[in-house]
Image 1 (tube, rainbow, N blue to C red):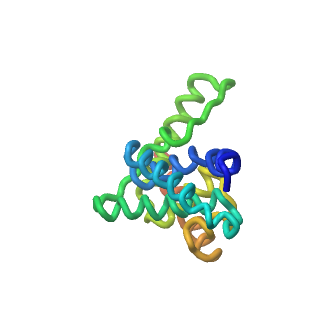
Image 2 (image 1 turned 90 degrees about the horizontal axis):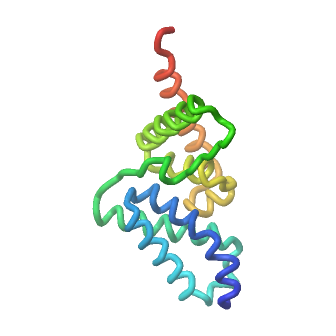
Image 3 (image 1 turned 45 degrees about the vertical axis):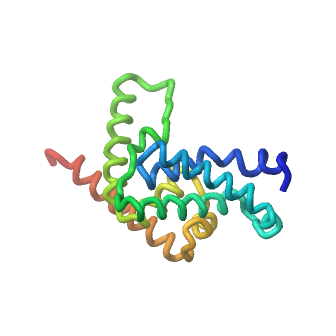
Length: 170
């Protein structure tokens, strides 16, 4: 791996790595440290360049492992607000629509934070980051059925809780 390959294949994924680390660690500085450590490890492990088929998935797996290692050391399990990790911009919406969208995103973020760890990771990777099922399998080292079941359960849990919240007066 040379510098040009590193800049074109690995560095473009650093924002996704950061958002994923931030989702797991709920601390901006720790997430930045994890991403920096991931990039250093990838650069150091240049000998594995021929073995890696999907650089982004490989980097995400390293990010997950380092983040979980940090969580084990500090014994905390929390996530940051979704609004910090995902910026939604709609220039055409009215102020009322924009406010409703922001409130919905806050509710969804709160509901995602209550999910079990595996479900939270899978739904973040699929619905926030947009990874395919196969990439999620590679990143989280799960089989396809576990990924699909976790995503299904996470989406159903959020849907049920949202319906319960929005069912007032009926």
